[in-house]
Length: 176
Image: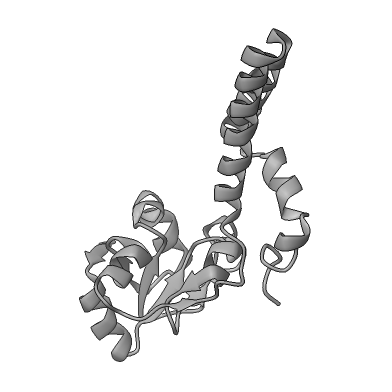
């Protein structure tokens, strides 16, 4: 099975000839910005809900890294299809001057929210530990331990909590 990496211009030509474009990012990322005409099949659920395709399929993510790392898994999800990966993802598509559909009303991606939250807690723990009481350094240690746990297990408690926040309720729910 051969998986070709193709440029945005080549992907655009293939789409005009009927190729299916598939966004493998999570729903919150897809809702914030996507390529018009793209089908959404998040990588996290692609085995349960694979794209229905038998022709040419082009997979994309934000930068091309997720699709590259998971190329074999993506190809297995569409047996019999000719599989391509959009080199550079939606960022390269946008940089090539091709259209994207943006919804600025959508919150920033959940993982970026986690990074902002964790970074803020670590900085606060450090500052409070220096200026108020050394015991506050434990906050930074607790957040660091949580990040290690999330990386090892794949479970991120902060992401789960942020997904419940009022601004994320519609953005992180699966599309119906």
